Image 1 (cartoon, rainbow, N blue to C red):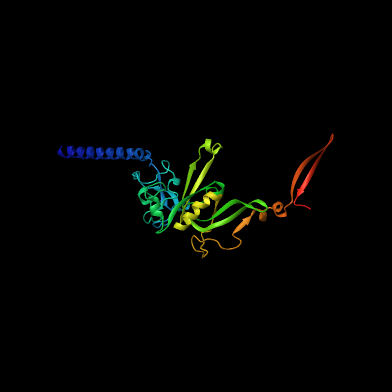
Image 2: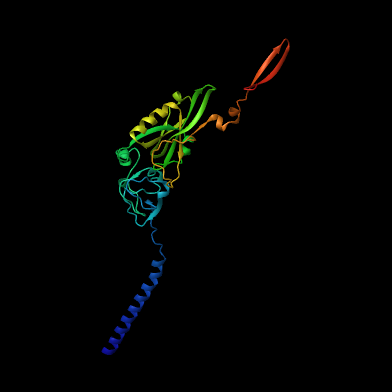
Amino acid sequence: RRIIVLLIAVIAAGGTAMYARSWIEGQQPTAAAAPAPKEIEHEVLVADLDLTAGSFVKPQHLRWQQWPTDDVPESYVLRGERTQEEMVGAVVRRRIAVGEPITDGAVVKPGDRGFLAAVLNPGMRAVSVPIMATSGNSGLIFPGDRIDLILTHALATGQGEQRVSETVLKNIRIIAMGVETADDAEAGQANERAKTATLEVTPGQAETVTLLTELGKLSLSLRSLAADGEAEGTVPVAADSFTWDRDVSQVLRSGRLSSRLLVLRGSNTQDVTVQQGSN
């Protein structure tokens, strides 16, 4: 009897174990089929190449990169909450390695306290000049670029008023590009927007630029990034550094300007064209 009871107990225990194992294996596929929680994807603004201290941030220096965790520091530029354009034109405070996030503390942005002090080289000055959108390369000039400054103005000569365009400063560094809105009532035109360019110049050139703003219209001519061996901030001395209006207009060069006269002779009228400057 004892042996029979013992066999029954062993068989019952084995059956219970097999049932429990079968039940557990039946539950595993159900758990595996449950979808895993989807991770939130974040993209932060990082440097696309090494940025040295004192350099300007340009659009080609930046790119968006996925952030591996949901814990994104507040100082990072998060896509969807901020834009890449916020950092364009800023000056790097310290070296930023390629792939390193761009933070507010790593750069000084235009308008921040200490921006010009961080940008200007020792002994240099900052001066701003007004330019129109078309004379500023349609917004394609950025801080850190180098330009030639061109003046266009009218002069009274023996042949009447003539216009001339001349390069007054060469190889000048742009340190800021700002926008100011003119008052419509004073400007006389609706929605007229003027731009200002801030230049890095010597004290003597600052006086020159201030006077140039009173003489005529200023335009910026963007220079190549390739070094050409020309000294920074040089004043042109070549004879071909200016262009008269007659050099680009055949009519002004020939001096043959036509005028129309209405001649009345009694009841007859005649429309006559007179060539000025002809014999």
